[in-house]
Length: 276
Image (tube, rainbow, N blue to C red; front, side, top):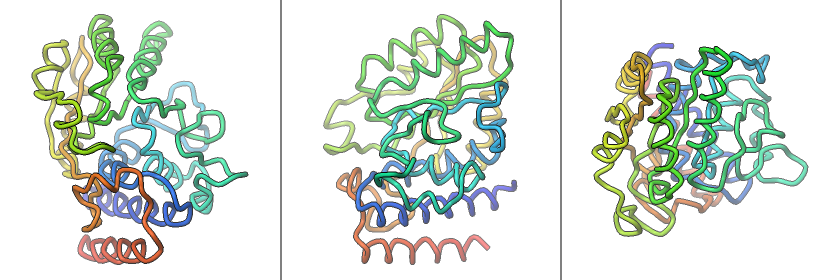
């Protein structure tokens, strides 16, 4: 896909996120919207995957460590063809497969059940180690939230990945600066993150997380790094694409009303028109 086509997909994912959250009346819009370009670039360009064979042994793996952002993952999986898009309207509803957090046993395309923050990188390390031991060339991608940086397990996993030279691991940090209780700086300051990750012997790349071309270049760079894992620190805007949600911590875990959803979709559709 071209960068313009990828931008269009990201816009579609944002529209689907809003639609499913309005229907479910619950969920996490802010951190789902902020990760749209990241997830789009991975699923529609970077990752070697096959929707017709979700458990293909040689596929690249994806771990959504910030599991509450499940709506963006579900939107990508549906758009990619892992299941019918109609399933999105069953988010968080009894009798449907799309739970509030990803479940690898219920949803095709989900490689790891997540939700308890801080554990995703450890799981990714395990997958990467298994790949090394089995002589496989698949890569493992893990999407972290910046609020997770306060979790000690993240840093234990960071040390382990560097120690075992897991160059088949690429982490992406959705650095939007907000979490459920406010700014990440006020809740538990974890900056400077670039220096910290470098001190933990990772290759660090910094990008605008909404710049598709920059993300493509970052993933290409990470793929060439040998002997150490890579992390892409992607500066993003929480609630990106919806004016009244952008940079507002209150939209971390509150679903929009029907009226708010209509306004959000109007804005996103106008943006889609500007993409050509």
